[in-house]
Length: 209
Image (cartoon, rainbow, N blue to C red; front, side):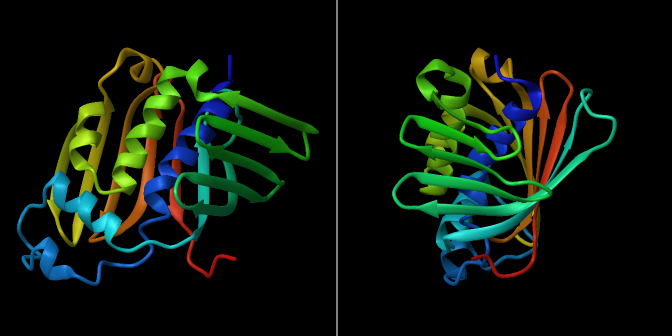
């Protein structure tokens, strides 16, 4: 069984499918509606996230866990290679990589001297996260809402989207995922795990390489 910290890291790896697509605000604003004060819908948020994509995004991630005496803060880069390869590389304070490609997730850690691969087929909850976030990355709001109960609040300039897994496997790992942002930019992702752990990922300003 994966420990809570690794589970949270994998959640954020999959969350990056949305994050990598949200560096710039959408150019075609008229397609998303010109009203900046009216309430936004899930469909409008997902459409805005799909509108503009970047291949790499710097991030900062803080993990709060009962296993830790203080929050664990790491920094690194998320990379997306179409059609479905996503890499999360931790650069500080140590070096680790998580790569998801197709049904395979590979984890490499220099400090642990470990390289391990798992199949998403062995973890139905994680597989559900991958498929749901791929749906979000491609702008398929309907498919996203099939996997999650969604609650959205706010306007185009400041919105919050809460996702709660519908399937028991997903609910056994995570209580909810809270995305906050403006237009096509996600400013933070908060994940509340079922075991009480919590993690926060924010977009780190600066050019990714």
